[in-house]
Amino acid sequence: HLRKSNTEPIIRIYAESEGEEKAIAFAQNMIKEIKELI
Image 1 (cartoon, helix red, strand yellow):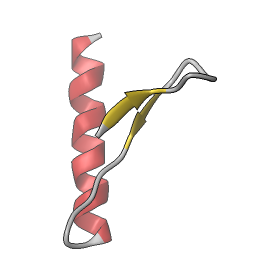
Image 2 (image 1 turned 30 degrees about the vertical axis):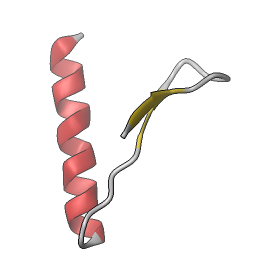
Image 3 (image 1 turned 180 degrees about the vertical axis):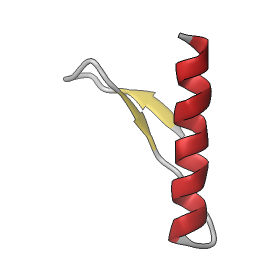
Image 4 (image 1 turned 90 degrees about the horizontal axis):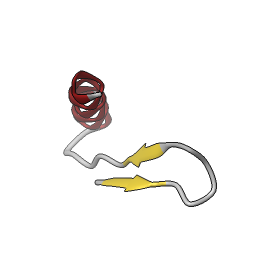
């Protein structure tokens, strides 16, 4: 889940998975892909 902050110049990333490690990996992958776009 992605959403822009209304109070800061940031994008918030929320990730859910079966375990914390998978959620972190998923979020890190999303960050990587976003950085490639900008």
